[in-house]
Length: 404
Figure: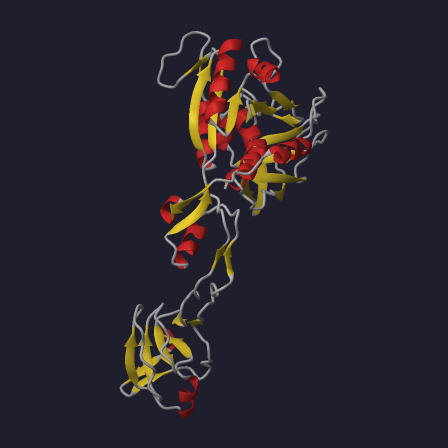
């Protein structure tokens, strides 16, 4: 893996994922705290959901055979949600509301809009059929069936489903502890005045947000000066506190790029330089047994490299077994006349033009232009050595798909 040639993304991911040892420690958390966490064990349905046949609409519950006489059906009961209804009296109907349990003896519910009310009772359409407007017991989940599988990342819908099982807590893997080190003497924290030659540290904030989206615990977030000693000290300190170190900058070939040098001298560098654009100067290895993911220094390159390399690695470490993002094929509404020797991830926008979903790209794809990612809602993937003409089919990854 240490050859100086650029490594294709697929090979790099294979290497990283083979080194991504999933967490083993688990904890039990309240459902309200479970968003974004990864389920640590299978969940089985303990009771039918819903627990009884119930009405899908506001209307009248009746037995269809009672309609054969052509007589109006007197209304003998009123059933609201939360009640345990008595059996339906033969030859009558029950006023019923959405979500209310179906009275024993009833086999259909007629929407109130389709009922004619007379002094003698209600009249229902002749075509009323058994099971009409009824949500059957166990329709959502049957007792004893699988509910959610171990390795599922919990979204709002999974939180609701867990609640439907009657559980107030859920077993999840503990959060991954991550240290973020941004490198560069030119970096200044937002809120401070800039001196000549300085820039604000954008990468720390970007990585904070990305790691929060991935439900990681940020245990260190520091800016490291561009010296070999400062870099080595910061890395060793972070290695003692974190499950993963993420750095930005310091992994290229410049004399002030110390991350790679420290890793080679004090740990192990197992991957360096990817055949992607932006994001070529990416490194991976370990220091004192703690994995390190070294990202480029340019802001847009940090975002792209983290999404395409960091996210899959983090998912595997977190025990997340959900399917990876596949992207979608869409027509291009742009041109790439000069092909790149690297696979390119262009900040792009999926939008509706002329009654068709198409992909447009930001005009300036420089790796230092972070505003392009704010304009975009995803990434357009251009294979290496490939030109693009309008209408060509390309792969598009939505940001929400990559991190969701």
